[in-house]
Image (tube, rainbow, N blue to C red):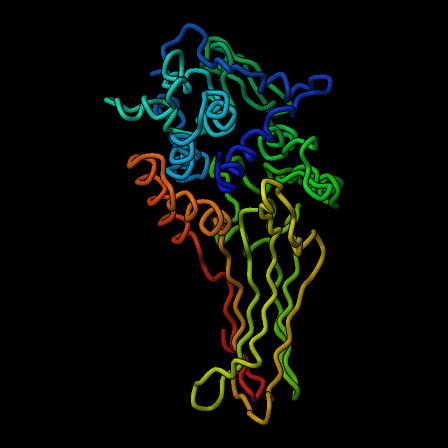
Length: 389
């Protein structure tokens, strides 16, 4: 019997299944599994480094992206605990989408998903995560977005074609929009594309790519990047004789903030006296999250307080509390991109690891999740109404 944490891991992966049940769109056809990028070409030719020979800038941006680390220690630690290749390949369809990447789990190794890693003697293509060929190559044909200008001589690839959908949000939605068949409280666990569709952003011509791949950079920036998050929010601090107000608005984010159930964002306000001691009775906070927990074997939504596009949330801290007076109010906005994994999945997996190998990977994942936490904004208001950034 799998633990709730393990069930959630399987569930998150299996949400991918059933995405393409309707009449196949251009995007659906592009992602139809099993995806063979190279045709008869050897897997070695599909490495990002091969593409980087000509596209050095793209390789550099991708190398620091979350896509390059999609085959993470946390994912692998869970894969080692899965019972069959059906579960493994369900996750890999997005974390390492090519058939050439999934070879370590082919044939007899499906009986024991841990076996390939116990016998591992070389670096495999699967470890590179979401690679260039995952989006840009099918059966030996190199695929790119429709160029505004092109001549017969500026494309060095022997076989290539342009696909308009590569620049459309639906292209990203195949992994970033889960199926409605297994929705919780009426919403898929990851509902990013639908959130964007319901926002004002499509009418403005703002696609996923324009925000997360600015100027075509293959950096795939998101909640793990403080600058990207800061650019999407507007923060204001107002103070008067009674206290101070902290307002955070979602002004340039085209989906719920944070999207998905994994991150947590906390607005926090604290009052301090003249001696620098916190007056804890006046501590205020508001948590932006979609908190999901298992009740028995049933996944339930406990709360959804996320900030929708164009909306605002605020907290207020008073100068007085039970006869004590403060002289300084400090506001913070704290982002925990991997909060759910750290607190609800990895710690539980460590309680009963299936192997020493799985335990080692989950421990690394726990450390990485903790390191991803950051304070995005920190502002201090003094009693004389001066503002200290």
